[in-house]
Amino acid sequence: MDWAEHVDEDAERDLVRWRRHLHQHPELSFEEFETTAYVSAMLDEWQIPYDRPLPTGVVGHLRGRNPGPTVAVRCDMDALPIEEQNTFDFKSGVPGKMHACGHDGHTSILLGLARTLSEMRDEIHGEIRLVFQPAEEVLESGARHMIEAGAVDGVDAVIGLHLFSTLDTGRISLAGGPIMAAADVFELTIAGSGGHGAYPHQTIDPLMVAAGLVGQLQTLVSRRVSPLEPAVVTVGSLHAGTAPNVIPGSAFLSGTVRTLSESLREQLERELRRMSELFAQAHGARVEIKYQKGNPVVQNDVQLAGFLRPAAAATVGERSVVNMAPTMGAEDFAYYGSVAPSVFAFVGAGSRESESDFPHHHPRFTVDERALGIGLRFFLEAVERTSSGQAELPT
Ligand code: NI
Image 1 (cartoon, rainbow, N blue to C red):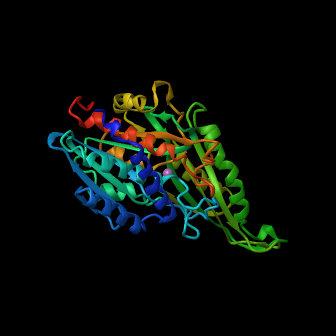
Image 2 (tube, rainbow, N blue to C red):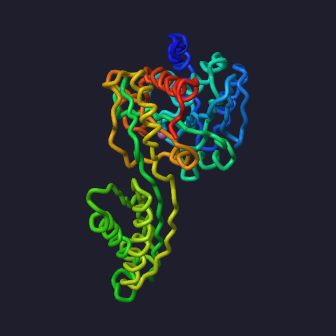
Image 3 (cartoon, rainbow, N blue to C red):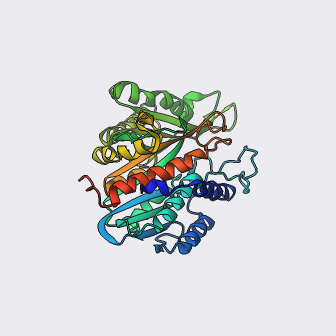
């Protein structure tokens, strides 16, 4: 019997029930205490041993009765500080917090995988490690913390998925190579010398430097990067001044840099620092630069993606397996790529009729719940290929 055939209507109903429970009880990054307890209680019920390497987050160890590889399957569990505007009866019960990225669905799918596999230990070769990860949504990255705490020590491959509202329900994207961007954050504090708005010549105007820099920084992309290579520099905040007739003493701006290659990432950091310093200097101001590295590029291992492609085809049909163009969004799943070959699939969860085509992080975001069963079947098809002893993992 195909592993995915274990998913029947009852199992799909449970996925929906769990997802709705989680949706009603959203918790922010590193605060997923109730979610952690919810997951742990189920693993107890299904007699899956687990550990808790961090205060929030759970790592289940499903060991088969036969020798084989260790394959990690990962979900993220955190919600966002957004006031939900949906009106369905399972909408967020917590003011100002909402599952607006589908991580409630991811957690539900991984629970479904845990339960299904817990009844199939005779067939499993090696270990399937169930990684319920906290804090995907923040720069501090739950993935990085889980890795440092040993959650994926000794794994031979890591598989993950994201429900995606801009991909139609019934499709799966499984491209090899870079699929999501490295995302860094910069903060520039420009120090000038303030004074009266009527006597600018007696001041060093940091606001003018900041405003100029907003435009100048765009030339990093338009003049310093090949037009064939994706890059984004966005200034997302700019603050200065208090009154129309006062030149302030300082100005502040912050933004994000997105790239799909590590070498370009290094180049843009270098050039952003240089441009900020020299531009400020040209106007007699000084700049303090804080540049924080965020998630690296999500690199789907080409061989593993090819190896798992039949899993996606078995789930949704060959013609519904697509290669979405890379996105400049970021994901901390990227960190797992430094531990073992990894693959991150996009599972379509958007449809007009279920009103699930709002963008991620929108106050009306929701997922098409039919995608939960698809996600679970895909994971089962995938681990059947890696962990049933029928084939060797590509190396
Ligand atoms: Ni997300």
